[in-house]
Image (cartoon, rainbow, N blue to C red; front, side, top):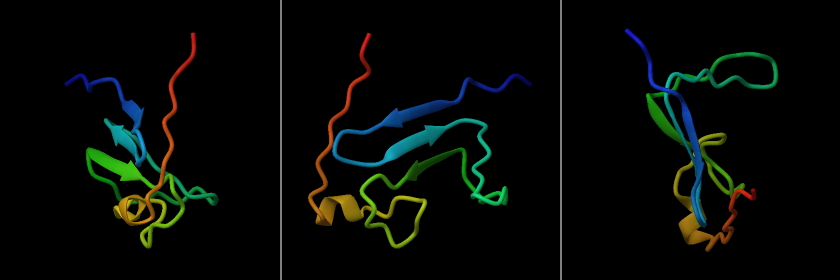
Length: 69
């Protein structure tokens, strides 16, 4: 079985969406338990870091980034 290419997408005014066969490790190399798709906090207000809990909406976090060529 061939897995699909992992995808990491920075969402406007929100989290970082991660999809695919990814291992998420902390600074000591310990692995977090993840699902096939999960979101990482980008605003810094999540109570479930490194995962997003939707706090960016309450905090009115704003950030729109685009890849440049």
